[in-house]
Image (cartoon, rainbow, N blue to C red; front, side):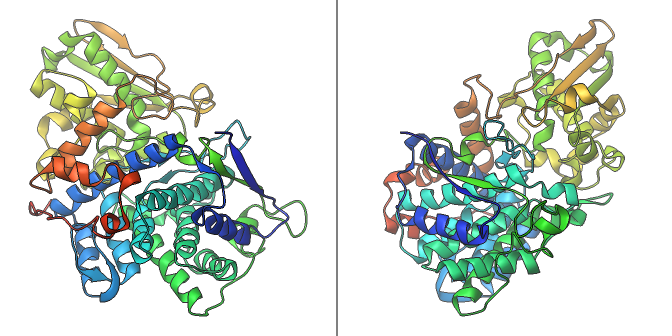
Amino acid sequence: MTNQYVTLARNENQARGIAQYAIDSMAGRFAGPADAVFRMVERFHLDSIACGVSALACGTNAPTVLRREALEYKCASGVPCLGSAERVMPEKAVLANSSAVREWDSNGTNFGYNPARGYTRGEFGHNDFYPVAVAAAQLRSLNGRQTLAAMIALDEIRGRLAEVFALKDYKIDHVVHGAIGSAAVYGAILGATVDQIESAIGQVVAHYIPFRAIRAGHQLSDSKGASAAISSEVAVLAMRRAMRGFVGPADIFRNPEAIFCLFEKPKERDTAPFDLTLSTAGDDFAVMGMHFKLGLYEHQSAGAIQGLMDLLSKHPQLLADQEQLRRVRIAIYEPAFHIIGDPAKRDPHTRQSADHSMVYIIATLLRKAFEQRRAGWQELMLVPEDYNEQALFHPLTRKIMERIEFVHGGKEYDSKYPDGIPTSLEIEHATLGRLDSGLVMYPEGHARNASGNLDKLLAHKFRLLAGLGVRDVDALYQRFTGLLSKSAADIAGLYDFELLEQGGF
């Protein structure tokens, strides 16, 4: 299938262009994504379900609080929360479900990097917004293929925005791109007009901008994990409000007082700071360049994890005696060094800080490797119990953390991001001497990794995580696979399964 695109030029109303793109995508007016794209988005959705089910089963705070909130908004014409058949207001179901799938910070990631098109602004983003597509699909009785198409369109909008505008440069949280995509796709499925979708996007950008204060501080809070959930909630709410007649700001991408032109003043009058190209057919969709996390860790630590796995596999004698470990030195690029090398994160007291702490992540993997006398992504995969109170203050983990040096690698590393995750890891060992991983660019889970191990590792991750929340993990796996052939009735009952509660995290 030939790749085809639509470009929304900077001198046009891009909010209306996004609205029309979403409407045309859902109406089947484009040739549409290739089968490989449908398969890829199903993998990311399946991965998010494992994350969500386990977060709820473990009683994590934000998903539990927001789920209880959602259940206070019962609505016969609404949609269900994950693991429930009870219907609630759509924006509240989306809030609860998006919070659950995002809580572990273990679902898909994009880095806003597309050199083929010259779009390389490098904004982060995550596959947190699929509950928006599912909620709209349930309200409009869409089948599985249509539901996946909605997820693809949502990822396309937020993924391409991440390539052309770096919110992080202005201390704005990356979820804004997802909120714009959510409003557009939700509205398109529900039958909103271009005017109404433009109005909803305008509301999102004018009224609901989250700054990265939610991710700052010595110990991170629930706000970090719930950011996408809150933005998806307001996107749905804004769309519902617009469909009732509320008129929000128009032409928001060219509005001189909105975030885009405010922070990047265009050289020409009445233009936006960027052109935006969206895929309409073929296999060149944004979701194809997104990355998987193979466990619970901040994605930018994946290069160091890969370097450690490589050294442990090549030198199994490293695990014979933990006292022989002298030093671990990790070099990485910016902004990863700033995000997961923050000095405050050398002493994490919460899971939200620990999973964004390079020294904690690597020390925990080494602790597990010493305890189990084995190595490998599958064998050492980080799971919820690796971030509980006992694990956070494990004496061996804390001892290893003191031996880890984490440095900025400089321009040599910076120039290779976001093409890859340029990282190197060195181990100084009393007997084996100095061992060097070399430069790691494309670790397991990265879109350009070619090891062939991904499917096996994703299946293992699904069973580890989802198995915490259901009696029959294989049945859950089957429920959320093969969506292409599932009926509207199947999608309507997609979340209707028994969810076990394992107690507090």
